Length: 263
Length: 300
Figure: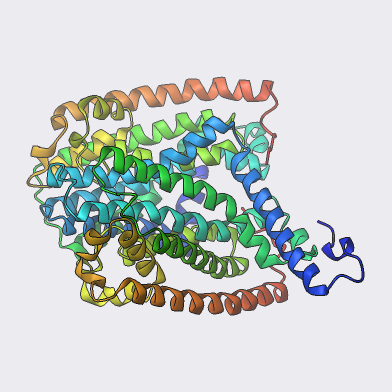
């Protein structure tokens, strides 16, 4: 029940606020368009346009994880709700899970719109090789990504206003190392390998391999290996999130940080 | 802040006190802005934070370019993209900074109403709040360009740079961005907290339409007029021409204009947007007062 209750405002509330729908579609579309025109200006193969469209859609999930998962407990603290969450007779893990499920669903709708608009506007050609693997990769990426978000949320529990800056910092550098706008194999192998800790990196690489004709030739690892690593990441992040949340909650209570608001 | 007129003797001209009050409002808000921007962490982490974001943004473009051209950084298009992206850092920081100050003061610190009733010039206060971001942006721009010169073959010869043109364009551009920011700041007075993305949305749109990272000719024909109407397009072109003259002039978009003509267009558009900003800001301010929005906290 807690999961459903926490997911509800994510799904319904976000649809009610029309300006959010606009911004969450408009902003990725602007970035996608700018990078597509850069590729066109330098004469890139057309598949790169598709790479950018898919990458742009995936930024919506990263933004959601950063601002609506990781930073969420910080927002709640700022607004004075966090202590109420802790006092209420429900599991914090269920609250985080609800946030993840609701956020994932609401963001998926926006990501689909970005893909549809981008594909239509830039005439992207797709060549699906395995629909089953594509769906598997997508769901594993989402579970691992939101598991990571749940883990980060518990870390952010201890932060104050620096939480905002840290989330802000985790945008462009992550876009870079995760290869959101170019194949991650273009980076140094070890950089790409280190970036694979972020589920977006392997998820996006596998999806590109599965939906574009030239995708496999730009792939970092084989799709099967990437699926296996994503599976491990799912387990590790979800278990770590549970353990870390309990630890951080106790620490925050002991150090009196639950109601702290340093502006 | 106390009333500045109290610090003047009766026989001092009123204009001097008036000017002094503006300067003091500006100076104090600039200092306040700096404190807000920087004192959340230690100086080292702040420096890293300020540099990592813009360098990562530039690196995305460098990798994209490198993948396609196999690292042909000597081609004319590369400095075009790289310098446009570097100077665009100012756009996001200055323009968005002013709009963000409204949200920050009203919703986060809840001090907007006190500042508004204090004897300070409110638009001057908002402009001052963007100074810290201007300083941080300047360091980011310098580091980004230095990185390009040292490691990516962006050929900027200091002896060949048209410094008067560069400095004039930079100053006019910063004023123009501040005026655009004031328009956004005025609009933000009427909007609720969760519209905080407006500044970022405008900056993203201008990034696309102003030819910051690709020549405008790449855009579909029906979208180009938007770019031609934006002062940022001419500002970036002037900065590129000042730093890497022949390279920038090689692109057909604004080839038919001389530097003087481009400066004339930039000045005219800056004047136009400045006048517009005064009217828009006053109108929004009046509406916000009438509707009781100056102290309305909409955060939830």
